[in-house]
Length: 411
Ligand SMILES: C[S@@+](CC[C@H](N)C(=O)[O-])C[C@H]1O[C@@H](n2cnc3c(N)ncnc32)[C@H](O)[C@@H]1O
Image (tube, helix red, strand yellow):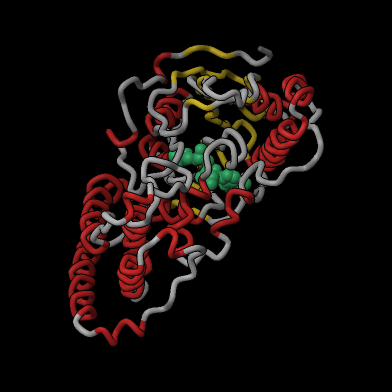
């Protein structure tokens, strides 16, 4: 290995889950354990300054930053559900008002249901193949919920309510809930599937408000500024002191389908390109060109020899990753740090050294690679097995370790 990798058991956090310390407000795939971020920030002695997460997802890096005392943070993600979760967690919202809004919502729905003529007031939802995924009754009840949530005047409270709304939509659809991708439950289960939309929503709303009040609200002290934007990161010269991020491991189609996982939430919340998100994420668009630059080439060439098309797909991911690294690199102040937490995925029996790729690209941009820690991956909720050779029954672990790559910008 060109860039030093050190096995570090301190970062395993064996037996600890995300939920144990920082319960998420909404499920999200491949979340980072905030404990890792906290530990590495402490190790680098970073207690203040500006932090960037260009792939912020549900915002675990912000939880890490707050814990060590950083109070100015910037996050970006092009999945609207990710931005919704991050913003809901890290925006100061008046909880007592939210609770009374919940009571108002119950009353409004109760009154609304008394008169069937009210149903004409509902906008028809724009969901692709709606009848395949939702029963008529469920669609109607979700539409009622949405109708009233959209009427909440306070933007922050409305956002917090959209979280259990997004969960409810998924739980009440015919999707198999344990999966990230959209698979429909078996036909024989459909006749018995009749969840109580309002019951699900209000119980999740209570849970959301409780977690927010106990875990997140107290951390949002005066002076804390966390901005989360719903776009790709654009460079800002010499602006950040630290970058803490866990980028995707590969394209969404063949690794973690963030877009598919978020599809119903995004569609019901009026994102008209919801179905296209996976192709907009890193590596989502394939160019018929092998990536030839640097140490990853040998590995891609191995794949190319037997699986040309596949090698192009993976090349596109690395091309996008390099492009993004270049933007991030110039945005960090001299003497600042970058911490990337990644996995080295296995494709067609080739283990792709993404950690080395990242170190190499930052070094090319005037950074010094300090260390890469290897940690055991015990807690990430993501598919750990696939069939990399595409031979039926041959399953291998795609990733059992994860890498924490640390580089410093030269002064
Ligand atoms: C591994 S996840 C981040 C998880 C996050 N650390 C958490 O704990 O929730 C990677 C994220 O990158 C986002 N993403 C992928 N391509 C992107 C791009 N080009 N610009 C911004 N975000 C992108 C995905 O939507 C996903 O939320």
